[in-house]
Structures are given as C-alpha cells and as structure tokens.
Image (cartoon, rainbow, N blue to C red; front, side, top):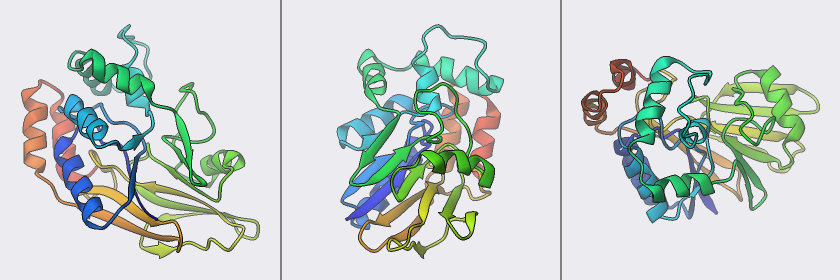
Length: 248
C-alpha cells in the first residue's frame, strides 16, 4: 500500500490543497495527518472541513489540543503570537468543527504502523516534547512498539534509525528504502505542510510504500502570498506571515 503522511498544516489551506492533490496524483491509497491542523494560519475551519470531507485519518496535535481549551488560559507555555493565534482560532470554528477536533485520538496504530504528533513519550497532552536528537528520540523508541512510526511537531523532515549495533542515528530525510527485514526501528518526520522550518518554504509531506519500505519526500509549491495575505487580513502576527516565505 502506498501511504501518504502529512502534518502540521496550521490553518494553511493553500499548502494543504497543493500537498493533498500531489499525494493523490502519486497514487496514495491512504493519507494520514499527524495533527496541528489549526494554529498560526488564517484558514483553520477550511482545513478541518477539507480533511473531514475527504475522510483523511487524523490525530490531535498540541495546537489542536490548546484550541479546545475554551478558558483562554494565559499560562500556556508558548510565544505570544502562538497564544494569540489559538485564541483567534477559537473564535472562528463552528461547534461541529470543535466536536470533530475533540474526537481525534492522540495516537493511532494502523496496519502495524504507529502515528503520533509529538512523541510516544507522552500520549495524553500532558506535554509535547520535540524529537530533535538521539537523546529525545531514545524516550520515544523505548515506547515504540512497531518497527515504523511517524511523528510531526518538529516541522523538519527527519529520519531516526534505532539499531542494536549503532544506537540511534538521526539524518535529514531523503528518498530511501528502510530495511524492513532488519530488527531496526524507524521514526519518520515528514516535515510541515503549513509552516516548514528547514529553510525550504515548500509544503512538505512523504509517501511510504508499506511493502518495499520506500520513503519519498514530497515538496510542493503553493500560493504562499495568498496565505500571507490572509494572515495579515485576520490581524494575526506579521511574523507568522513572513516566516512562510523563508521556511523558518
């Protein structure tokens, strides 16, 4: 089966549409979203409806989690523009869209593959660790039951390999065949659809062939100027708009 995996859409409908169309063109038979559907971007409701209408399998990310907190807490551990964007998002969504976000799981296992937004280290929203090096990956791999897992949250395309002989290796994700006949465990981050942070502004996702172990990164251009205009028009931080052009 050819699987498409994407995540960290962050209310960017232009990027989501471009990536989705490409994954369908490539022949993906199933698409999974790793969470953070909302936050930062100016089209949260459209992104929710897009995923829901196409029956795309989704899990809950930290921005989705905080959006569901209607107390508008000021003690969230995040930057001011992130908090402001979440509070703004809360005012845009319909009851049906809130209910759909609430229904999402934090973690899924599908056909022997695990999907999590942040790390297997925590699965109920207690905190949201970034898997960005061997040390943080160690906690994840300790709890990863399947040979292959996917995570979001870091906004960077990465491949982590955990082997008995070489320990944990981290590398930038590239087209590769992982060894499904080995005892290795693999954790793949597809990067971000709506706000990449690897100095490449193009929307990022991956395809994964579950039979051969082939992973192919997918980068797509989209109407980034339209996304930026919407952020400014919504009264959100200009920094959120400007970073889309540079991929940081």
